[in-house]
Length: 261
Figure (cartoon, rainbow, N blue to C red):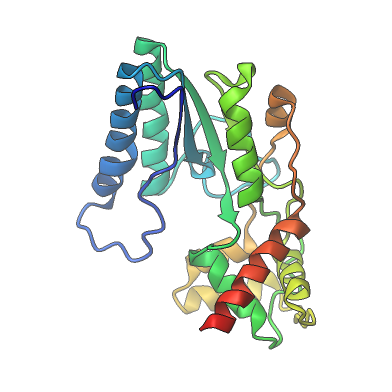
């Protein structure tokens, strides 16, 4: 890191869908806490001015109800990944207090765009099939997402803005989506008719739980909404890409990938 002014630390252990380790939290800590500490200490020793740390909204928790998450909320992580990210944030602050390194923490919801994997890729695959889907009545939940283009823009903004030092920022696309709206937009981008059946959310959730898919039901039916007004005000930032822009770019990549295969 000699001669480097700014570090953007993105590396993490994440998306381990079928964790076979005997102690998942310990494995997350090795990379997400100890690894972050090593990066921060090396950066400080090399005279790096600012370190941007990509964290996760999972530090706040897993689900919102009446109100959206804000950066001032007390952290309430529930899974091993979220706990490790919360601990990494704390470690980063301790190191910065001792060294003068300028930390900036960015907490994101689900990030999508070309190359996306895991749950979003699965949802895109389902949306592309053209068959009627049982999501038509899931219109009341709200999910915050962020397109990779918007995430890159906020990361670059945080490298330079003088007000970013020592702050925690929550980021999202400009519009939250219900599950029904997200699938509708995906199918529109895919050139498919919406074709969604209005299965009552309670019925769909019960069926998924009986099939051992409770975590899937929580994601499809629940809300995870972010209030990013403080981010926009502090950094004088607005999202350069709309949700529709981001979904189109993602779908274009997906269709090109499928055509190659």
